[in-house]
Image (tube, rainbow, N blue to C red; front, top):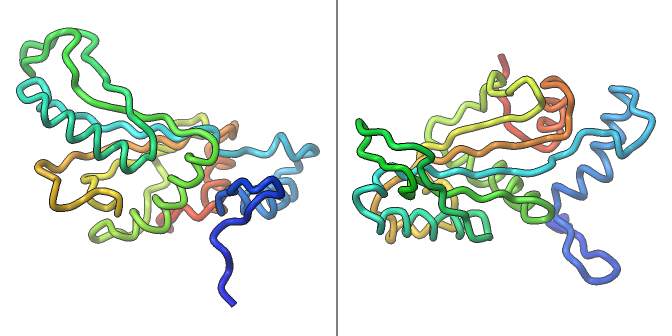
Amino acid sequence: MAQQAAAVRPEGRYVPRVKQLHQKEIVRQMMERYGYKNPMAVPRLHKIVVNMGVGEASQNIKILDAAVDQLAAIAGQRPVIRRARKSIANFKIRKGMPIGCTVTLRGDRMYDFFDRLVTIALPRVRDFRGLPTRAFDGRGNYTLGLKDQLVFLEVNYAKVDKVHGMNVTLVTTAGTDEEAKNLLTHLGMPFRRD
């Protein structure tokens, strides 16, 4: 019999599969490995920030509108438009011009996005051989870049005029990169074997 994707809480609320995995198995494994005394001290995902830079928006604002709609479909929540902090003449950007959009995911939406990223989007990347382990920032956070938004099933291929890359930052409560890597590996992150 096939496993259910997610369980339903007694009050009828949906619980993401990755969140259940963390609560039931990963907490115990991390407590055994690192000697945490309290389950609340075990590292967990805090938030996921998805950023899409759209530099061409300075010439054509419709490109930014399309990017906002696509990022909203991918993340499941409306992104915030980011504006230039200072003027850069070489890029023809003035202070206050819209140049990108970003969305911060927390809670169940964060776990749903992480599940879709790991199980659907990353395997669809062409010539994917795993993620590098050198992209940790020293504080337990991991950033990865995607070259196009078409790896997500939520994006309608026929409506895409221009391909945009995006950065996905996974912010964890881990104190070290080694603990964060262990946490993300348990959650299903496909790291490259170095």
